[in-house]
Length: 425
Ligand SMILES: Cc1cc2nc3c(=O)[nH]c(=O)nc-3n(C[C@H](O)[C@H](O)[C@H](O)COP(=O)(O)OP(=O)(O)OC[C@H]3O[C@@H](n4cnc5c(N)ncnc54)[C@H](O)[C@@H]3O)c2cc1C
Image 1 (cartoon, rainbow, N blue to C red):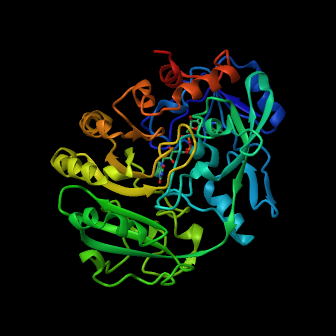
Image 2: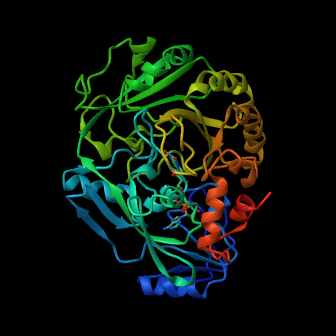
């Protein structure tokens, strides 16, 4: 095991963690010792969050040096993997065995449990967030004691234990539901009027397995990315040259202006494996831009039109600091702290210039407008609000607080972020 006093930063470089020590245990026993001896312990996944959710002033642990687990259960249609494995690695290994995950986020570079812990999602009106596929977790809890929870055997606590913000301990293994592998054809339709997106919202987002609408809110147009399963009616064919008043892109396209399109997964309708089309970005390149910060708000789907009207009004305020924005849909799931928990959801994502001082006031204005519509913020991205204010958007927060307090009464896995979120009124 390596343990250092090295300074750790997140992927974007906007957060420097305050940890006294950074550990890379190579066995579960080493990990158990770190946890048993630690006063305050947090896990760092692949570090792609933009806020202080992974921070600690105690011991920061990475689980990516633990022995790799990849065990398929054909009868149950599941795979059990090490929690620190990157989604891209899990996806490629599954595909090689003829299986698939139902959905992926925009990038394959993120660790499985770091993603699940914050409620990470992709797009698709019939696709819930990534946590929905989790059927069991193995956790090293307080005192270094192992615990296994399963959706089937622990129906009361499991929905609270999946999107857990790292509050229950160090997840070492996770079991994911799989489905037969499938192929996807990706099309980019440019110059689609935002008014058309609003008027035909259900149709636009039902056109493909995964749909994203990109815009910078400065004009009246958006670019729609359709990721069409070749198994569905139409076989992945483009829905029509003038679909929704736009036109097919002339050449490969990157959502962030000025970035090379070769960083993106193959477009122009060339069918390919699900895991090489569902993410926007290819594993071998920097995803998105790198030099950026992000925020995202999740609203009940039926508030899409109202939210889009607010965001169009805010366009001029966003223009100096916004790189690009993305609209996605997510099917309701049952996890207590999932941003799409209990409701079909429309998500508004924002990739900003890496200038949090200039960006946060704009996010604050946006949150002032969208929180009254029921917005929830992404747990891993920037917000102008305190965690306790964000938690108020979740009916099941009191149940989550009880779950965490019962499981970890001494608060070993807490940090300032969770102390604020879980404080009693
Ligand atoms: C370029 C880019 C694109 C993105 N695209 C999307 C997207 O399409 N959809 C979306 O929803 N989000 C997206 N995100 C956000 C990202 O998915 C989340 O921030 C996610 O949490 C990152 O996973 P991670 O492994 O880096 O987690 P980290 O940031 O390392 O950790 C996040 C949280 O998980 C906890 N954690 C990590 N590992 C474990 C473990 N083994 N056991 C217990 N707790 C653990 C940490 O303590 C922390 O609280 C994007 C981020 C970037 C940088």
